[in-house]
Image (cartoon, rainbow over all chains, first blue to last red; front, side, top):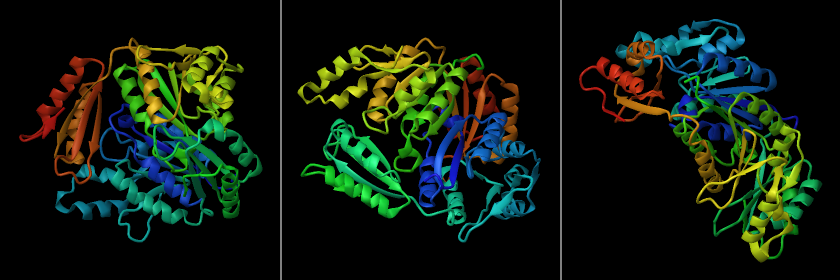
Length: 246
Length: 246
């Protein structure tokens, strides 16, 4: 798994850190990266502050193959992600003529000068497109800039997914649900972990669920190894367990 | 607002970064900190890895008044937060006799040797309690260790809230909902921002909602300043706006 491409995400969000809304984009991003074979290893949620965002972009783009930002894209004073990404790369913010034309076409007669701020990009940015998506995704080197509004984040994620498709084999995941207590499962899990080094084994207790008490997961890129770790675990279980597998 | 106590959170969660579950605790934590007057300025979500967690705890506890961890607490191989926090402080993990007694009492005859791992704490840890909470919250210096299961996280959060009560005046928040486009609102917002430096003004567009298009928020600790910023904004709006205020 160490050879998988890696990703980090930056969530720009005063509204999340102040408890106004619950963050919704990371779950969707994590699923897309997972199915594309990219290991998401770090998510940082920070305030809408140019310096803080710029510092974070600079640090993460050096350490990860992909850096995805969510939020802070728009036309008002608190939308500073584009400026921060530009600062991280030491380039100016420029107005992209192609994006400007798209915005003018979209708003028609209702277009306002301030709408055109949505056409601002760090100098040298690429505009990624994919079939079925009208608006491009702005990227510069390994940094992908997505807006925070979940519906629009989702659309841009579709473009990112199309561009990641060849990043590597997808991760595979199996799970077994048991009514056994984690403390009782521990020696079984320790054996499975020790003998299946290519597979990541997770154990997740459930609180007050009559259907199961512990979910055990088996993740990896080698299908045979994942299946064999699951089989190994199943063989160690007493009769009547697991309740079900996925 | 620079004089507010600050907090950072560390979410330990392979299951979140791999897209298995959606993170649920940060929203609850953010609300408790906000109402306690503590500024949550950073949340880092990382993998279940001792070294990574220890490095993060070490870095954040030096930079923030409070560090709250979520997840990685339990009895199996993937529960490494206690060990990581101990490593960050350069102390061994020890078994706490009082916690051990609580566990033995809770499980009664069903107690398993492996359950007692839940009584492990970094040497020198404190056990915080509050009225109505049976199990203490483990803390060492400014680091508070909470489990990831949302139902248990919530209970520990109740203890944290009781201990934070005197941290400072709470943040106040007002909001106005309008049908106006952000691009049209921008000059109004710029004026409000410029003339109300003690208030944080946020602007959040909504996607395809017939009830409103932009939510504008006013946050701060000085009630008069927050109310005055809201009033200032309301006066700049055209007749018929806002749709409502909160």
